[in-house]
Image (cartoon, rainbow, N blue to C red; front, side, top):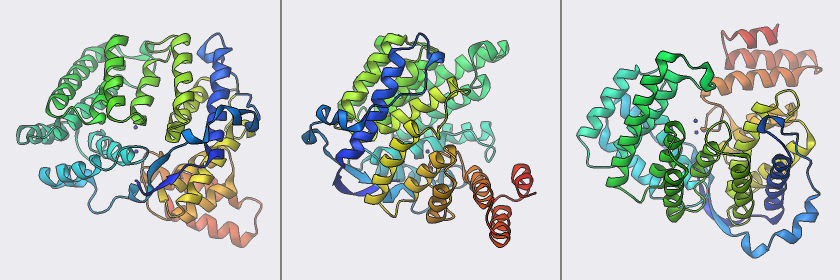
Length: 399
């Protein structure tokens, strides 16, 4: 709710083991629980015990295109909403979407769609809609229909809110359902114009969740994605949400899906991201007992990111993404090191925005500075205020 890599490399076996360990443990923990909210912190098995489960021949080479995560040239939102440069937006999306499939090449294209569709304060919602309406009217491409479909989905949840159904205002439901119907109509038109773009069907899975579509309909969209790109992780994450008991799944169906990921992750290691998403969900259900700093949770994450960064040492995206989990685990030394190496740019790495990233970067520096010399404390306090001026929490931490 968002970069790529340029060389084809073989994924390290131990990295695959680490991700499989993490996945298997959460899968077992879920299988033993009565309800989603009763999930316990995973008890991880010794990684060596899983060696027999992994055939090295199945740990295939994947397209790791980290270098492209950092945008080159104008950002998509600027091209669309400030310049209304429809042809340039389509050219950018076409270039991103036609890169070799697998792993991260899908990621930056997905982030571009998310960026264009996101409801933000920088553009009024109705102005945003009017620009996309004009784009759809003047284009023969599927891209404007995909973006407007994703926008209507986002606008629907802006109206509804992201909380539980019992927390939604009664007068919000009609407009929410209307936006979801609009989204579905746009995405089906995008599919008619181009049935070879997995992002269209991945987005339809999210709409299936919001619309309450049948399992059969959702699975049809998921299979359409898998035929195009078996490891297209946005679709796997979308299906994960559909199968949560809070939406349309059962404990049994969720267990089966986690087992399927456990199998697929052997040959598609990037599906590790689905596991991170699942851990975020578990964390939301178990705020009183789940700790990212627990070594059984943090160590496999640290190993997986460490190996990827060793393969792609210049990736800003990976360093910022790893820093997110280091921050959550209160590993301040590592978080500061990663943020310093990443520099002063933002690479759609899960912090929501550059402003949010800078706020947490500032707070990380202040956490790190505690116990250091007065000179270091002053240096990091000054840097924190530069990164996040007029921020209450940063000012509070500095004080």
